[in-house]
Length: 499
Image (cartoon, rainbow, N blue to C red; front, side, top):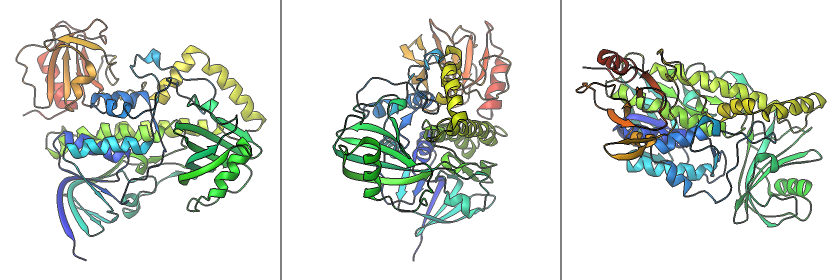
């Protein structure tokens, strides 16, 4: 077979949410990007279909949230959950414009991301299964179904069963799953009273009967996302096809004979293994999304974790490719995101116990106690911040209390009139935000660091802030006059190497 050679700056393996978001970020920064996807076409399965509040904020910063919202079904906003317990999580204390998860099938989120990535110039090559990866000091060569792609860097976003990870022989330490379940997109030709009629809090969509358990979520137009399993039985292997009769039997057991399966659009099995790479970077190969970490699928944490991996990595990798990155910037991707992934593995492990469909007396008692705790405002705020990503702070050097955290999307008034803070990041640049005339005139800022002078009625609590392209503060001051050398040192330390 004749191989076609492609030269690019970054190759991304996997066209899921993490890979496509990374392609958007890289292409936005002007990096030539090729995405290799083994599947010839997108699987239109409604898995992972919830965008958590912090992910919504990041998508809004890039102008991607509105096209996603246009696809969502109308309905009352519903708070998130912890272990499917019957207490909605309240994110309003975190001062966000998006306090509730946004529900949309993952494949539709992927459509929006792919459209933006290709509009920015990224190339998405489908039916390109990677079969070999070789790297040297200068780059990476990837073989994929007749293609030979040469890139400066490779990012593996190819899922929990990552081919790239396997080809490099990297261990994926952790624990195997203890449960296996089925996810199916179905249509019902008849329904009984127990079938949910509208999308609500997950605790209203769950049901147990005998040894069956399920979550049945109505998606509109007679479509449902049906997640189900059985307790006390050895589950079929993950590769075992899901049969129509298996789905119909579960529906009858849980919802009665009056609920009749009309059609099965697609189905698959999944498990609840907990694993994480020790290092998210090996040479010129990096890992993001499920290729770097897997965990029990609770609260759509995987989709959100992967998108946030991509937003953290994209601007750092772009600066590295362009030769503008300060020392250690690319390594900070692992340093910042590995602990975040470990935290998600930790709390989803706890949720797996609490959400056990066949809890013993001890677990049932623990559930009661946790439900009572979640009804306390401070405890609810803490868990809401954890599940939503709004509580995330990176361990960045800096004495100011805002350093390392997000800035709420406040309204700013300046020369361009009144704008929202999120709109300043549409180009993927860092922003030096001067709210009190603290930044001196003529400061020699490098490209892709924008100085914005504005005022706001509900300020973030500083006279000036330096905000990274991913929306996290890396320097701030309360003083009426910022030290120019201090500002430039922060730029050089956190963002881009100065001339």
